[in-house]
Image 1 (cartoon, rainbow, N blue to C red):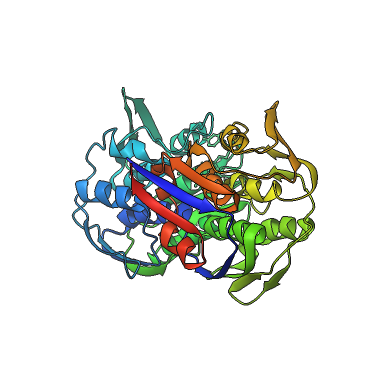
Image 2 (image 1 turned 90 degrees about the horizontal axis):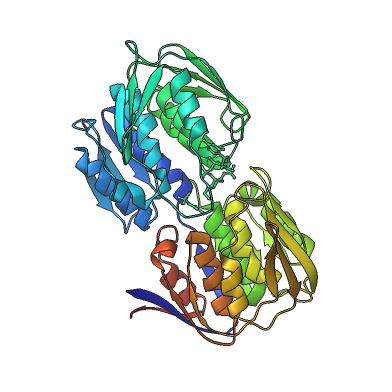
Length: 421
Ligand SMILES: CC(=O)N[C@H]1[C@@H](OP(=O)(O)OP(=O)(O)OC[C@H]2O[C@@H](n3ccc(=O)[nH]c3=O)[C@H](O)[C@@H]2O)O[C@H](CO)[C@@H](O)[C@@H]1O
Ligand SMILES: C=C(OP(=O)(O)O)C(=O)O
């Protein structure tokens, strides 16, 4: 079993370069199935979610050349067949549900094991079902998988209103509708940058997706799609994680390969706290920041404060002065980092789905458990801030989404190691 060990309490400085976005690439890889051709993805992060998706794609018959050093995947989907994708690998990540939209679009049928991903409380998929049904597919629930099949000759475009803003359901609908007959309109669509990234790839593959990034997306289905080359956008969540770390213990840290506009609500909170930043074309410099103020955070759909960043920013909040709270309106049970931070000496608790904290806190190293991906990122940050040694177990969650985290943090002066325990 692997663990991360951090000897914390040291100041950091230098440059961290951000990798391609996990929450984009996990949709881009299944999207390549729609092409029946060769698609090259650049800027692919070396994370275990990508490794799992590559394995699943190979089981389906895709031929994949991977060069993780250069961040490139060349995916040939010409010999992909729609075979049942069982539980197991599929269940190791959430994004396996994008195979439903992609396989349904290309083959008119899909049998995919139930999705997994981090335990953030209930993670329903009723809106995905609603969209597939509206497009003319029926679902047969099997024991550990679901089977989808087109009822008539093909999927038929229609108007779909999303009752809740959902990244997953918006992307899955775009995937299936790209190969449907006629026009599909998604109303109340999610507006995350990852949705624009997926739409860009689909359009480069010959689809006609218009309006991605707004809450109305219009997809004109096409019979044929083809190969393309695409560079994944930078990971705004990885960037936010390291910006928060730099604000807590940095003596000048540059986070490069970022798109500032994707991080506006996060940066606004850092500025409200008093963090000193210089924003450049594609990098953000975090200066040594002192006397930070406690702030309140409410996570909401983009362009609001991202749910994925509420856990990674928590250790920084603990270094401010005052009282504050966090409410996650997307996943209200996303609070598993709280008891672990309390074990490190934080004055933090959960009351009625609201995280309450009082700062400043002197954190001390402890043995803690990463219960999910972003809780794990929060513990890495807390471990780097804390005095003494922190041992983090369950780190496979962290490796789902952070490319070369040990190397990147070592380079700026964090005393961090991966050990076999
Ligand atoms: C809007 C939002 O911030 N989405 C985040 C969500 O995406 P993810 O794709 O996991 O979740 P969705 O965006 O689909 O879900 C948003 C909300 O809609 C609800 N829902 C979703 C699908 C459905 O069929 N029915 C339903 O009720 C969910 O319970 C949740 O409360 O988690 C990802 C991983 O942490 C983040 O990267 C996304 O930014
Ligand atoms: C929880 C996350 O991912 P997933 O939806 O894949 O579990 C995340 O990226 O923070």
